[in-house]
Amino acid sequence: MTRVVPCRFKLSAVVQFAYRQRKSLAAIGLFAVMVALLLGGTQRVAAGSIVSGETRITSEDPRQLNFRISIEAEAGLASARFNFKVLSPTGNVGGAGDANFIAARKTDVTFILETNTSTRYIPVGSEFVIWWELVGLDGSEKLTDEESFIFLDGQYDWKSRTQGQVTVFWYGNNDSNADAAFEAASATIADGEALLETNVPYPVKVMVWESESAGELARQPRGSTFDSQVVTGGQRVAADLIYVFTSDVDVVRHETAHIVTKVAGDGPFTRIPAWLDEGTAMYLQKKVSSNYDRVLKSAVRSDTTLNLRSIQAPVNEARLVNLFYGQSWSTVEFMVDAFGQEAFSELYRVVKAGSTIDGALQAVYGVNQDGLYNLWRTENGLAPIDFALRGTVTPEPIPEATRIPLVIPTSVAVAPRSGSATDVGTDTNEAPLLNNQVPSTGNQIQNTESDVSTGTIGLIVGLVTLVVAGTLVGGALILLRKG
Ligand SMILES: [Zn+2]
Image (cartoon, rainbow, N blue to C red; front, side, top):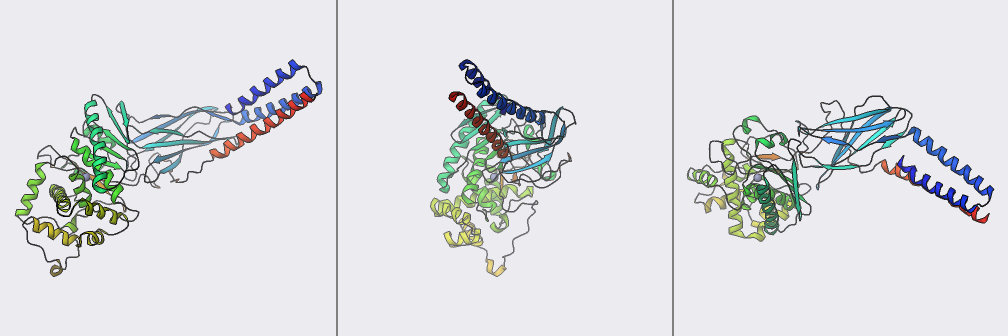
């Protein structure tokens, strides 16, 4: 409807102009015919048109998003389809599904998107673009304008602050924590970029909850056994998005570091091993809990440290988690102290370029993971292991959750509930946002990576209409002036 309003306005102005000029009756007659034709055409469009408002979006439970749009369709709706994209610096993902409505001239069209299921996880904090495809029973079609929004946990009243490339979200009386998180994230990006000689090229979002339980519904569920034994301080849930559940700024530093390690080390076909990822994240903390040191020293004393090759994926067994983090941290610290920052950043570059970790270590340090482990053992007063004698190419079996290829795990330091309350956390596999699952709402979701929008077609039709109308009006004016 709005599309034709400017056209009508122009025509009425021209009619007044012609009347004032009292020019040729013939020209006015011709003009009147054109006006009638145009208005007739306009009415036909109006009769078949579908009018819609803005989409109302709610998420009282962050495990689902509810979309509702009021529409008015002359003939009633034949179909309605909801479309969405989740924007990500590593590639947008999206989908579509059939929406619900009743067959009336005026109706609300609704769609429920499950965001946290066993097969799909769209983290709170994600940026969405949505639009609707509406078709009337008379064949009229409407593609609504794209609408953007940030998916927030509707249980809380969020505030945000953006400065430079960091945006922090928080709620309640958590302002000071939010400020601290903002400072820590900004500083860690700079420190991580310097350590790894890289550049984080996209904005980073930090979501601050008041406690772990407050953010529970927004988190991707893990095995309940593991969850019951560890407490989470923070998580990196997407390439550009971290969650923070405590006031500990080292949690923020740790999770932000994971954003930098991903940029520096993950290539199209390769990724850094967990020990390097976690070790670097802990190296970029201001301080590390003495728990890790204690557990590590104990393992060194009893010669029960972990073979590096066995911790390329994060340890999921709660009793080994502290040792996994402690040893990863100790190994990275040893690498930087003994061989320097330049070699360390070079290791990241070689992995990102497509090398295996063994190949990259060999190229930069002259040893593979076994050799590096032995150097570290020697540094810690342990005898090197003769891997050739053992024939230990086979990694030690470790418990591990189902993992998605080509995505990195992230986490923050972990401690048992019974231990010190500091530096606690767990790993999160960064799962693909969506897949072709049929959600419980019964709406079939399909991936749509394409940015091609049929909205473009609607725009072109509108422009053509304006050009045709303009040409007719121009022609009539020329006739009037000639008369
Ligand atoms: Zn971590």
